[in-house]
Image (cartoon, rainbow, N blue to C red):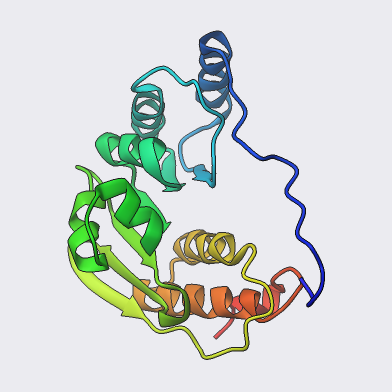
Length: 198
């Protein structure tokens, strides 16, 4: 956004979906996702899901061999942790609100479920902190002039998935993810493919 421009959000609240529709949504994902696929749940969700819905669906998909990454907050993120989603990602504020704890190192253990490979917590201009396969890692963000932070978290998530699919080392994946997030906040356009290179 440029100075003087007003941001317009089309939705002021999360849509409410009936339990019957949630059942249809779950059945759709169980039907279309297959072993080797990635399922990324990012951002806000409609409300009204039956208690345990996310936990059950994530568990069912993982049993099929689908890799699940959840980038959210609150009840959805808690159910993802309970299900042991392979990847959990959130920013520090989302981590603190979800866990009720302060500070990345106090939140991080509460975001890891049985079966979780990696927990990534973004820290804005400080980069990110992760726990992957039991090891604490961090990646600094390059210093940039912030133009628009919209979509920076999604860019980090995309880089994490891309790095995993490409078979990069986790150090390389996290470093590039932090760099892509920084690139996104310093530009007012989509992240170019070249942004994923060293």
